[in-house]
Amino acid sequence: MVTALAGTLRASSLDELLDRYAALSRYPSIRFWSTTNQAWEPFAASAGFVDGPEAHYSHPDLSAADFETGRTFYYYEIDRTGRTIHRLVVHRRTQDTVELATDNVTAIRYAPFTIFEPEALKTFTSIQRLGPDAWGYYQTISAGSGSDFIAVRSPSPYINRLTALYRYMAGIPTDGQPPAAPN
Image (cartoon, rainbow, N blue to C red; front, side, top):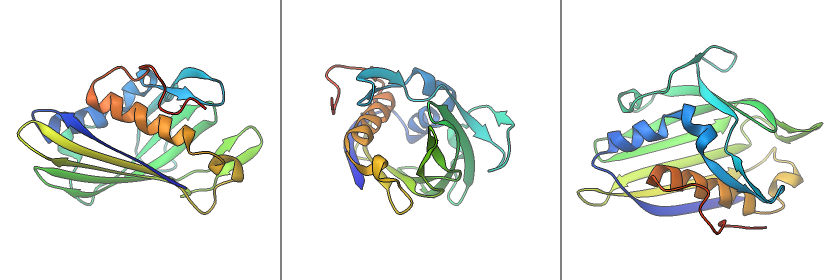
């Protein structure tokens, strides 16, 4: 299953947007509509960058200057499924464009079930200059091979997560009514 969102962002520079993107410490403030619980919930209870897929040491948010073509970073998220390590790869970075890809390095479990094997959950993010202060934003989430049937039964959870991230990047309240996909 692949879900995508496209929109426009306002910012004076790509660096401004990348600083926002790299502020994983802000993830607990991002709220998305949980179709399971029918409530606004934090995107993650905690998130941060780590030195590698096995590392537990967390370091501060990255800055825009860290996003160089070819760089790879690892980060963790803690949410109701537990702690997951993700890989972030900068595929392309110019003054006017950035292309980023992430995947889960560790399995994502929900209760006793593995809902995503390693590398089954992927995102792709592209930000491109459209005008002086206008930026095109495009993001996809895909649940591919190694995803449990529970994880692909509905696109709604992915739509809501994409919407929350877009709203965060746009600097608007992430829990704005109505939810993008209420059920």
